[in-house]
Structure formats: C-alpha cells, structure tokens
Length: 485
Image (cartoon, rainbow, N blue to C red; front, side, top):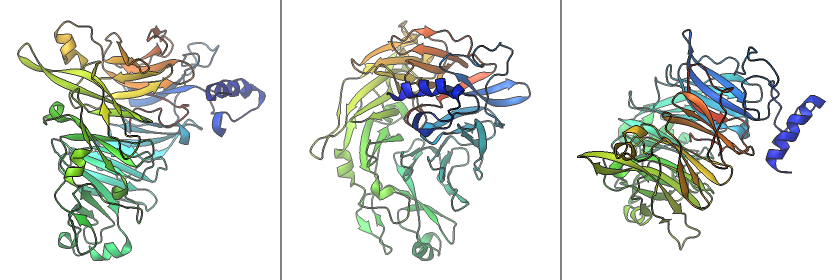
C-alpha cells in the first residue's frame, strides 16, 4: 500500500476507533489526515496573527458536511504577531512559526494541534531563523542588531555573536552544521561548541581565541565560537587550522547533498552586486558544531575554485533531489535603459563520484522576482517543481509585455515551465502529496492548483480573513515537504 493510500485508509478507519495512521502518527483532534497549515496576518483588528488549517482532502476549512457557520480549524494557543514563515517538520509532527511582528518563534505540535511553547533568548527581530529537527538548537540572524544567535536548548543557554550585517542562516538537515551569511559580503561563517579544555585555553579574551574566530561567547569563558571559513594553511597553538579567508561571490545560502556530507554554497553574484553567479561545494565535516565530531579540513581557495560552477541564470535559491540540484536565480538585463531582472531555473547534475564534477544545463526562463530574494521552492506530485517569487511585476517579462506571474510550475521530466497567471506575490507553497494538488499563498490569499496540468481548483472554502502569508502540508511524508530550510 502506498503512503498516500495509507493516509486515506486511516481517515476511513478513524470512525471505527483507530487512533493512529501513516508511520504511527497520532490521529489529531480534528480527525483530519490531510491538513494544510496557513499562517495568517492581521485576521482581525484585535489580533496580529493566527494559525488556521484546512482539510486538504475536501478543500474546506470546516468539518465535512458542517455548515459554514461552524468554527474553522485553528491551532490552539497561538498568539504571535505577523507570522511570516512555517518551518514544516511533518516527520517530527512539528512546525516552527516565525512571527515578524514580535520576533516570536512558536513551536506547534501537529498531533495535538496546539502550540508547545516559544523559543526564548532571541534578541529582537530575525531576518532568518532555523531550528533543528530535535529542537535542541535554534540559529538566527539579526540584521538590525548585527547578531548571529545560537539557542542551545539542552544546555539552557543562548549566545549572540557580533557579526555585522549578518542576514541569513542555513542549517543542514541533520542539525549539525549552521552557516551564517553576511549581506554584501564574500565570506561565510559557522559556529562551533568548545570542549572544557578549549574553554580554559580561550578564557583570556580575544588574544587567546582561535585565529579564525571572529567572536567567542561568553567573552571570558567561551562555550561557543563563531569562525570564518578559512583556507587550512596554518595551525595555531591550540590546534585550529587557519589561513586566508575563503572568498565566494556574494554567498546567500547553502543547501546540502542527499548524504549530508557536502554543502552547496549559492553565490548570488551580479544579482546581489557581485561578479559571477555560481555554486561552490565544500565538505561539512570540518564545520560540524558538535564537540568532537569535526573531521577533515576545509578546502584551499584553489580547491574551492575548482569545485565551483558558474550559473549564468542566477543563483539565490536551490533544492536538491538525489543527484540533481535545481537552482533558481535572477539574471540582470538592460531593458529600456534600466537594469531589470529575469528569472531562471538551472538544472545542475551533481557528482556521482570523486572523479566527476557538477555540470549545469542551459537556464530555463521562469517567473521574474526580486533580486537576491530567497524564493519558495517545493517538489510535488506528477514530477512537478513549484517556484514562487515576489515582486515579479518589476521584472523583464512585465516590462516587455510578455506573460508574467509570480508562480511557476515546472515539469521536471521535460524541464518545461508553465507560468501561472499573476495574482500577487507568491509567498508560500505546500505540496499536498498523493492528492495531486498544491496550496499557495499569493497576494495574501489561499489558492489551490492541480499538479496534473497547473489548472486552478475551487478555493472558495479555504479562503481566509486577513493576509495569508505562508502555507505548509502538516501531513507530508517527509521533512522535505517544506519551502523554508
């Protein structure tokens, strides 16, 4: 029996007393087996945000066969303001919702359909935030305060490192590597926990810290240090390698190989004021933040350059599927005397062994978007890849009279794109796997599309009051069913 079929059978058995369904998950209080979570901003004058969810099997926000006056489904206990992103973790039956209005990171238990608490210790608003699947660590970039923050839940402590203009963070799926990216910079940074012996060795302040460390916290008894990725040219007195800083080209994000051993750094290039858009691969093992688990060395600059491939279409977001990486970006073009940006998808074939290298196909034209912005990307049924952009009305397509929209469906079997009609910024996409549909948040409202042909489905019973900003399929089969990572 397929996983999707198992979900449907479980839903049918719910009325017969069965309380679990696919993968041993608990049937939630709503009794629904196919739920899409919706982050809604300003649902009323008295509330800055709410988390509603809908039955994605019937595409309704109320119980089947109930009246439209019945209470809509919602997550109990949520009080965050202006929820802007959902980090969806269906394997853990958990979601992490960031509220940009108050800087809150709220954890939701999908099994109970209620919040379990908020992360504490975040220093103001975060421009990028990620929690590990275990909830043991949360990493946040605070552009306004120039801080990179580590919340260590198990130890009950949090540390904020000084890193001017830090604005994005990427964490590997295993939750052992975190990379920090600085706006308008060509460098990459990563944190590491220290052993007791290292804490003692580095307790004399900056003059005793590892050479590659840009900050250590606490100042006089450091438990963590933030390192700059450097070429391993030398070794300091405490055994840490250091050298010339590894230089990228406006790096903005990292995605990771299927086996977790490689980080693919996305170099935004001209889209972000740099020179050449590209992807650089480097090993994650030297950057693991867990004590005693680091191994190997970072590459030299020459080796890094040899493991970098140009992406002429632009590189500001990507998604890895086995041996294929889908890279999305914006390419600057001169149109009517001004610089505008054109959206592209580049299919990159990843190495199959030590003797092979990355190869990139020709760019595929997709929705235009805001330069440097991290788009939404997710794979769905029927071999489709869905890409959401913001500010697509400011791109080359709109300026030159071509068909434009902020949402693109790509058939990955043929690499054929289909641009959906413009209805506003596409800020959220949820793949309702097994049911051949996706939910989107576009222009502040919820929409539904068929993955078979991209046609719009009836959305009148899932629309919300307020501004729908993100959506997530709570009952996805894996944590890959997520657009924020």
